[in-house]
Image (cartoon, rainbow, N blue to C red; front, side, top):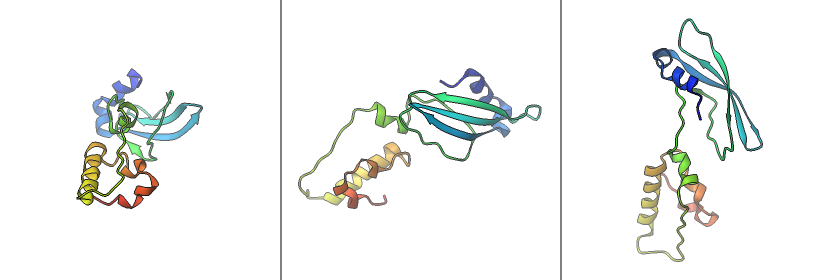
Length: 135
């Protein structure tokens, strides 16, 4: 859960106009992720603030070494679908009448649902590696 002080800061006009967040470090300790953040409130009267955020029992992350201009907590997000949705499998033991059309439709549906967040080839077995093509 994002601390209320941070949510208040992020919703301020100063932050929206000139604030930023920089990840100084992130480290894993057992199942927990520790983030050290430099937060510039965007206010001329306030200097940068140093915060440590602890994310407990994290399963996966997509942290990038860059500046960010917002931070949010999500219950629904493309990155959470693989943990919250019921898993499904698709198996084919022969080539159908329009194999290429099926593959293209799978790629399009995956792209609509996950965008660039999760690559389709993450879920393909080794026999399927040649199927992935740019949409």
